[in-house]
Amino acid sequence: QVQLVESGGGLVQPGGSLRLSCAASGFTLDYYAIGWFRQAPGKEREGVSCISSSDGSTYYADSVKGRFTISRDNAKNTVYLQMNSLKPEDTAVYYCAADGGPGGLWVSQYDYWGQGTQVTVSS
Image 1 (cartoon, rainbow, N blue to C red):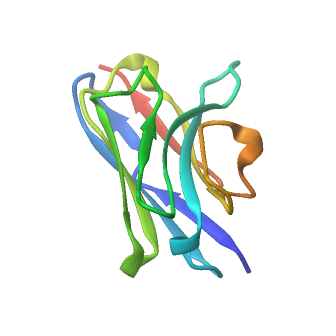
Image 2 (image 1 turned 30 degrees about the vertical axis):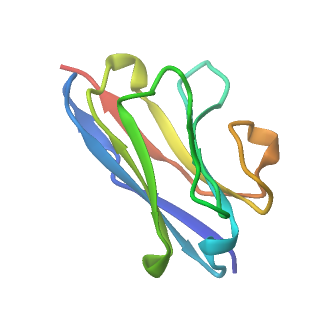
Image 3 (image 1 turned 60 degrees about the vertical axis):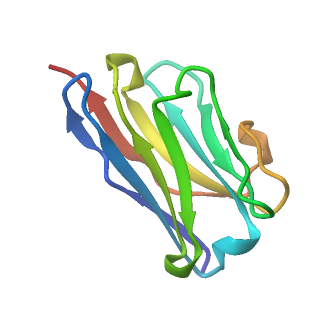
């Protein structure tokens, strides 16, 4: 059974950090581009970052460039999203997703999704 499970969300103060994990089971992440998305209440789901399967190229939304870092550990079948300098506007449910193609920041590209993890940035 193909499954993605996110973890690492929580409540953090502005300026703080969190590291999200996306663990895969039932398939090997090596062959998939992995994206991180987020959805705030009342807003559409948006792409945050992705990492390709081929050469490990990374891409970021402008809103998180310089603050978030995506990485993958194929030996652990896990992808991470390190989030630094968090802002209240980063508050959302964060999802990871797998794409058998080249990846990108569009929701429609992705085949498999996790259930999401809540990130709340507040003082």
